[in-house]
Image (tube, rainbow, N blue to C red; front, top):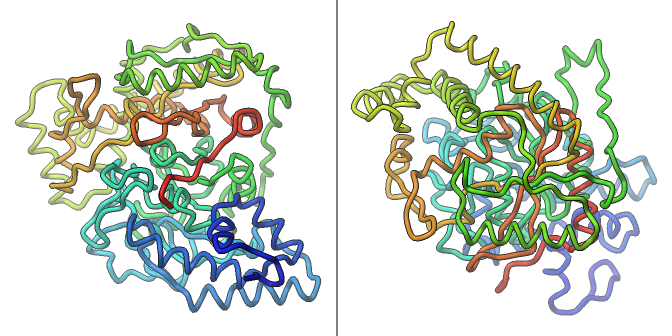
Amino acid sequence: MSVNGMPTTATAPDEICFLSATEQRKLLASRRISARELLDLHLDHVKRVNPSCNAVVALDEEGARRQAVAADAIMARGEQIGPLHGLPMTIKDSFAVSGMAATCGLEDLRDHRPPSDAVAVAKIRAAGAVMFGKTNLPAGAADHQSCNTLFGLTRNPWDGERTVGGSSGGSAAALAAGLTSLELGSDIGGSIRVPAHFCGVYGHKPSYGLVSTEGHIPPPPGHIAPAELGVAGPLARSAFDLELLFDVVQGMSEIEAAGAELRLPRARHQDLRAFRVAVWSDAKSYPLDNGYAAAIDAFVDDLVRLGVTVDREARPPIDPAASYQLYLQTLFGIIGAGLPPPARDALLAAGEQAEQGSYARRVADAVSQSLPQHLAAAEQRHQLYRAWRRFFADYDVLICPVTPTVAFPHDVERLDLAAQFTRRLAVDGGTIPYMDNLAWPGLVTVANLPATAIPTGRKVGSVPAGVQVVGPYLGDRTTLKFAQLVEQALGGFARPPGL
């Protein structure tokens, strides 16, 4: 058997689907495989593997084949090509992709077909990617499980009884299962980092404001104002691929770009041993399961053996509890403003009946906050930015957990937002509130910081464990470079068993 003259074994086509995007680009550039053949390999792989995980929920095979044929013709003519030329990609179903529905898992948007691409998607298309499908997510992109009434439940390729995370859960699962070369996700509550951690892949939450979210749902279709905290960013099977896609999608809105040029600082170091690394991996501030904590400790031990300078006691000069409350107030103020009246009223009613300090009460208070309360929170966030800036004067990156646990068993009997007030997560023989899952991601998000989620090379039970590498505001190159150097030194993505 051969692909465009390239000798293969019976399993080689599947192996090609699991290569990094950077490696697939090399195959395309050397003409060892065509864009059309690479697309067909992925479509065949989707047909065989996707039924077991349900990560890809919509396909545009005809449109993708037209894109692939055009990509091959450009290559044949020797014309200049973009950085993603010929790579087959899926896109999270919260982004507008022309020619396909964009539902965000919502019944009301079942037939919504945007007339044009989201801004970030248009950049991906212009860079030459072949977009062939959409990936699953929770309804409204509002959960750490990817399940909705339109497309059903997405299962973790490592263990089908466990969640892929959310909201970019289908994105991470598709990468882990070899269904796509790259993915575009979004993150306001850990929605890139949590799925990457749960599925053993890489994800980058950019500094706030670096990637346009215009054309993303939420907010509802037609809205163009960017939401506070929310970002769009890449997921991949390699930290090098993250930067490849990040370079394509970054950039300000058209209006801002007319009078400014974005120039991110270069990575602080090129040698892993030059990084000053802080580690925050205890349960004193936010919950953390012992098994997951042990995996992080073992990963940090690996760094120490490589000669990396590590400080396990360093902490930013912030109050973790106050930071988390500020995050919840801001996050659910944003979410509450975009809810339809019945859903908003249901949250407020749940809060009225709940105890002070409970998540139901805290969320209801955030949803009903006044403008002066919102402005006071904005001032507190600016104070927080300064505190983190002082911390990153002494340290280059902070390694910390992504969530309290690794991927947990499905709990989707109810899918409404209020169901998250009653769910529980198993931690060290006991349980914690389900919404504690927001604590570690929120530490980073509330301060607008970049964070790169990377695998530790360890599993806890049947599923992988990742960490988030946090950097200073606009220090995206630094966290990405650290992730790349760790990948080179310790290895990176591992293919789930049985695929």
